[in-house]
Image (cartoon, rainbow, N blue to C red; front, side, top):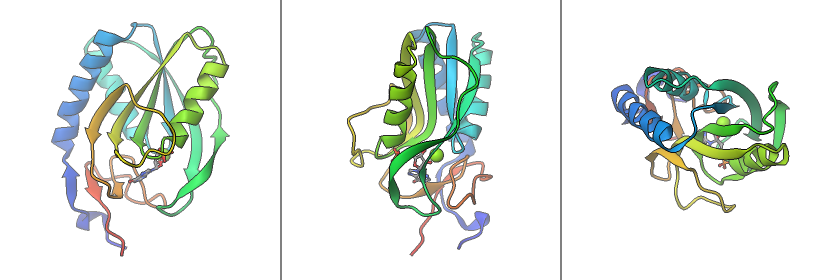
Amino acid sequence: MPTSREIPVLYSAEEIEERIITLAREIALKLPPDLMIVSLLKGSFVFTADLIRALYKIGLHPQVDFMTLSSYGASTESAKTVTINRDLTEEVKDRHVLILDDILESGRTLQFARNLISQRNAASSRIVVLLEKPGKREVPISADFVGFTIPDKFVVGYGLDYANYYRELPYVGILDIH
Ligand code: IMP
Ligand code: MG
């Protein structure tokens, strides 16, 4: 397995930082200010940390909660089911929810999260993802806000992992494991 320092850059830390500032502005323009952010762990913890501080800089103060879902084992193969490993502690009823995830691939994780949140009677739900892989969707779902649309490669860094490695990379890189 390559070490962190051997992973080639797809989006640099600077490019991600700039894009997140713009995303925060798009979110602030389109969504109500009293947002409840539902961050899907583990992959989105770095993205969440940066996005909520970008929202702060433009005057938003969302409530933030976390939910751990898993659809992946320690491999790059998509699993068939999504399960809740750790649930939210806040109620989403009557709240305007913004679901945050690291990457939209098959769409199963986000479909599961969005269904759960609407079953709990949220006032609205929107989705923001840092990355999106087009052409990989297995269920009909799209994100309302997308950081970057990426090629069909396995990516790591900036919170995204392979077997819980590489999350510490400050950039998004391509993991070539062959
Ligand atoms: P989906 O349910 O297939 O859309 O997959 C979403 C989840 O799979 C993400 O939250 C990631 O944790 C994981 N995932 C999908 N593609 C990648 C990748 O290229 N690198 C790392 N994790 C990925
Ligand atoms: Mg994940």
